[in-house]
Amino acid sequence: MPESVQPDKSAEESKTDDQQATGSATTPEGGEVSGDGSTAPEVEGDDAREDELPAWARKKLEKANAQAASYRTQLRDAQTALENAKTPEEFQAATATLTEKVAELEHQLVREQVARKYELPDELATLLTGKTADELEAVAKTLQKYAPTTESVVLGGGLTPDDGDDGEMDPRKLARRTRR
Image (cartoon, rainbow, N blue to C red; front, side, top):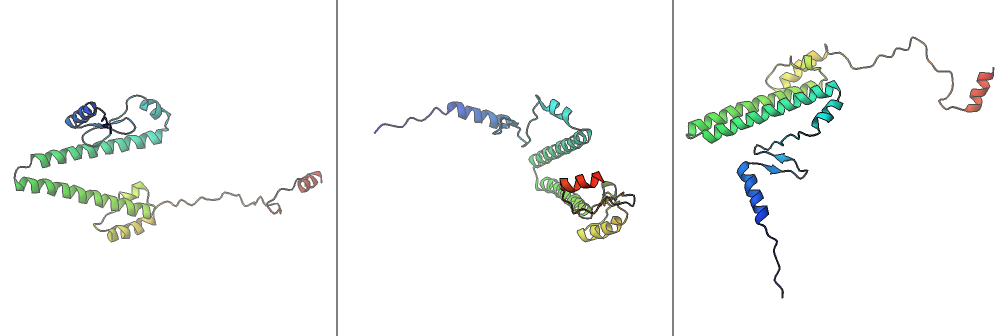
C-alpha cells in the first residue's frame, strides 16, 4: 500500500504564527482583522463609495463609525485594566467599572426601545427619565401627546376626482364620453 503524502504545512503554520504574534488575522473576504476583533478599514475604494452617499447617510455613517471607535477604545481600556489588575481589589474595581458601564448601556437600550415603541422623535426621547422600563413607559405615554403625528394630511381641496366609474378603464366608454 502506498504511503499518503501530506502537503507541506510549514508555510501555513508560519503564517498563523505571524498572525497570532501580531494579533491579526484575515477574514474570508480578504480583509484583515486586528487583535481586538475589529476589521481594519479598506483604504482603496471607500472614498468613492462614500462620495456617492447622500449627506444624511454620510452623517449616519460617520456617527456609527465614531460610536464603533468609542466602543473599541472602551474595550481596549477594559482589557488593559483587567490585565494590569494584580490584586483581588484591583480586579474587583475593574469589574465594578465594567458592570456600571454595562448597566448604563442597558438602560440606554431600554430607553431607546421605549422611545421607538411610542414613536417619539429623538428630541423627545432624550427627555425620558426613569430607572425601570415601567417608569420610562409612563413618561413616554405623556410625551407621546406632544409628539408630532406621522399621519399624512389629505389636501383634496374639497373636490373628489371620482367621475363615477368603477376603477377600470374601458377605452370605448372613454371615447364616447370625450365625444359628447
